Length: 177
Figure 1 (tube, helix red, strand yellow):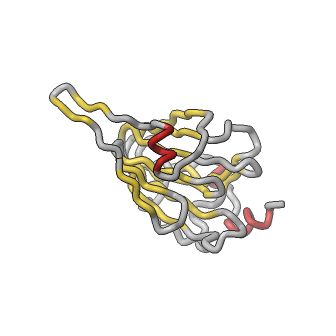
Figure 2: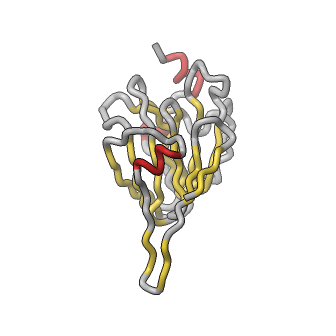
């Protein structure tokens, strides 16, 4: 596996190296000791599976008050994945970075970062989460907030009603205790 630091401190791009032969491929997607050795020391407690059709945009989502780390793995397809530093006291608050994920790449997202993605193809994903899902703690931020200036590769994405109504980043920050 190869670890790459991104433009923001904290998130990490992980490239897994599958074993490929005429039968197919096998890849180790997670081994706690290996991830701990490279500075990813999140105790994951929940796995969540998601499917998204091409053109779907999910996010931006962030957990409050029980912040959550994520390890995002695309099992099939490709996504444009975005993280935004949503930590009010961080010197990089409001800054974002993006990567394209496919089955040989993972993204580690530390607590306090908002996450969203656009499905470039029909995609199947697996998330490892450090905090169990709880109703009311997953907050949304407008994916198209001009103050964030995220350069999504989407003209008219398919959105949930919740994501369509999401507040601006400034409104999100103002709502925090």
